[in-house]
Length: 194
Image 1 (tube, rainbow, N blue to C red):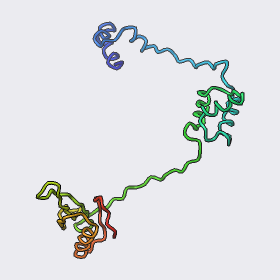
Image 2 (image 1 turned 60 degrees about the vertical axis):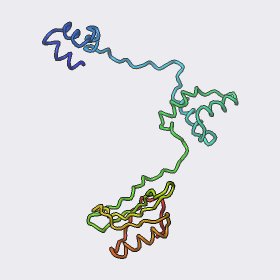
Image 3 (image 1 turned 45 degrees about the vertical axis):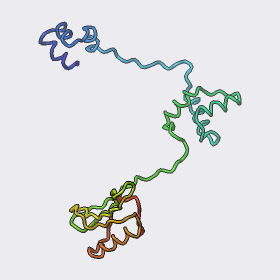
Image 4 (image 1 turned 180 degrees about the horizontal axis):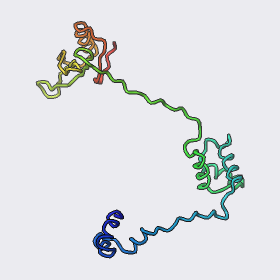
């Protein structure tokens, strides 16, 4: 908006440019002379550095290391000790990067999803089981299909009356013998033992 105003004002003037763009003239002049930001004065009741250090030491102590500032605040009030408000405790923790869980926690490494890449036919096969409707209602056949990932051709298939690990294993073994395969990618719900 200000770029359009800066472009139009020298050509048509301030009033026509502002009315054409729907901007109040006072807003245009305020944009041209922004007020300097004065630093916010420190409140008189703010904690000084030594008090802030003391609050941080209390929050990081063995006793309160696993508690939230609200729990620390409540326990200290039960003992007639007032350090600061809960919000101030959160501010102090945020200034020291401790707003997250302050306990040492195990970091899980980023796992890389395994990916099988085929650069030629018969390097990697994938298999799946599909349910096909039978001749009567409620009956299904299991279609076992083995696909070549590179060419996406059907390498082999078998139709069975039911789903069984032995059927899938025998199908894979039979076709693997012919192609001397070593890698299979599986998307089926049933994992066959190798």
